[in-house]
Length: 158
Image (cartoon, rainbow, N blue to C red; front, top):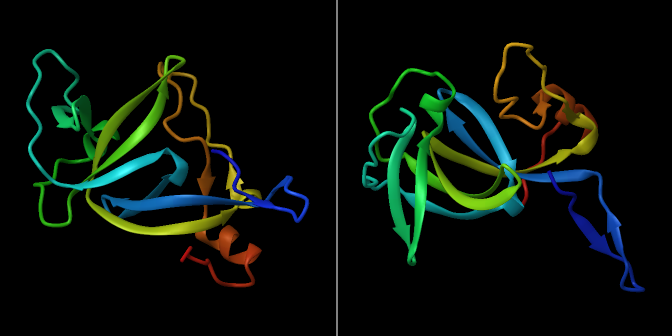
């Protein structure tokens, strides 16, 4: 995650203690991604299937001439399939994979909000010895920890 900053009167940047996250819902749970990684949010449309890809890759779509792979985040997390509906969207992200930045879309059940989360409330995810790929999460935030940082309320960005 990258830090958000403000500008002092002399033009230098200062780091704030908050991360701004775009949050979305998958299987009734709220997840977030650094808002600076979000390229766009698209309504659901069927991607063109590509053979011999992992089960969670649903295909590709054309975004202004770029071919973008689309992954079902629900399936990637090992959750039960759900029929795509009116609230289903594709969040198009810039991701770093294997040292290369690329654009990828993830299918989520519904959008939630843009939220400011205190950096102090972001805790490292647990590590598992048998995980071949490493963690999909950079950190975990509990609503209670975030609320405590803001005097009992979790603020949303305007």
